[in-house]
Length: 321
Image (cartoon, rainbow, N blue to C red; front, side):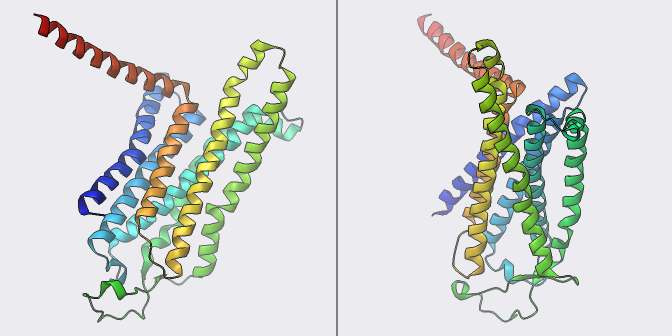
């Protein structure tokens, strides 16, 4: 790929990953200012949008840094910029993943009727519980990935490497300079990024699917009530789709890491594409699930269309005169 092609590729990734999240963030904040209240769904949407934007930008800066200096992983100590980018990528992806898990739980508790008194009590206070969970996830993530600032190349790094032989240069794997059990820390991060969020996402999504299918079949003869459940059906579809996007992104990132660990060559474009895909798709799905955002998007589209038609008609009139 030529330099111009790579520039266009990264610009496209930035537009895909950032534009939708910026749109959601701006108009969600606008809605909150108008209503002077912060609803749970809007809070989660803000958290996801902000972290998706930072995630895409941090990944983009990291890839550009590696492109400018392929030997950057061999430098001791690692530049602070590299450590900061890794910290932001890990922290923001963690918060965004968990925000989707909390959103799935919130919708499940709201939609599904439970006979247990414990779940009924949770349903009455679900907004406060999820709000606290989202904020605690943000705080926990900022602390969990703080050791990333201690990443550095291993001590066995040969300082007198041949700069002209970049193709055959193998940099050592990063290690932590602080005293800690790196294997236990890595295992904890992997569990918190994949299996644990999935234990929330999958059961809640499946429970909503089962409930809405049963509810729709029971009310099949009552057209009005079935139409009333269309919004819940949309929420269910959106939630399942978010889980699918989350799992697809994890598979791509895991494949990238595995290939890098076994020493095979793979471009960082894959990593940038994965996070751009994740951010773009989540922003699109969240827009589709929010009536206010859909109305704003439609109004902007109609405004642009009206302006285009107006400019065309003005041109025709001028030509006739």
